[in-house]
Amino acid sequence: MGEAKENDVYEEELLDYEEDDDKALDASSNANAKPAADASQPKKGYVGIHSSGFRDFLLKPELLRAIQDCGFEHPSEGNVFGNLQHECIPQAILGMDVICQAKSGMGKTAVFVLSSLQQIDPTAGQVAALVLCHTRELAYQICNEFERFSKFLPELKVAVFYGGVHIKKHQDLLKNDCPHIVVGTPGRILALARDKDLSLKNVRHFILDECDKMLESLDMRRDVQEIFKMTPHDKQVMMFSATLSKEIRPISYGNLC
View 1 (cartoon, rainbow, N blue to C red):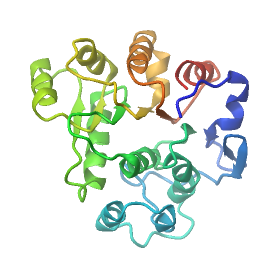
View 2: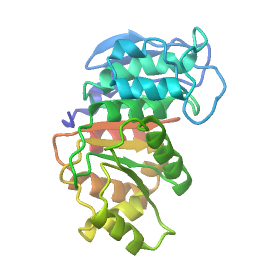
View 3: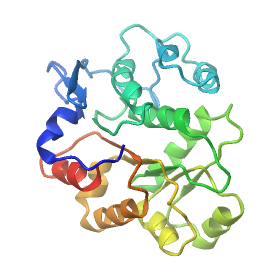
């Protein structure tokens, strides 16, 4: 988990769901290839869930209950959301590093939300998972998804941090009711971490959503890399994006994994 890997094996490890609907896709982890599926279905809500077979992942009963409670007990057969999630979730819940490229609306968020919730054993005052994204709107949406699927895990706390909110409000929250899962934008997270208001020394899951958007911007990339260095070496890294250009791939893979 979190070990640095060489760029020349990147292509073998990338879970890549291409834009071309007719193209055969490959997904692999640790050089074990698996066939991926057609990715042509339209977006259906923010997080797509395909619960058929979710019990095979041995998810916590509380997570399975939340999935059913959200109305995903009887999905249609061949749902493309499930194809992506069945590729990624078994690896993610084992703590493996994951880089996943998939079109928007394909259910990427469900992968890191469910796999993180499955693995986290909440400890008071410790941040176990850190999720970074490039806009406050996306941060807010991701926080809502964590809350939705942790509704039967009452001891687990989630909070969102982004600019535009007075930083003292965030400082007070971290001091008085420290969350186990932190979602936020790089600038605000870095400011809180630099001032020692946010401790990242216990982070076990480091997640970048829409990582290409953050890594394309030089300033945001520097913030992400500085935050990354504040977290433990031994951690799980998960990165998700709709697109990963040839220029951004080695940056995301070489500098963060």
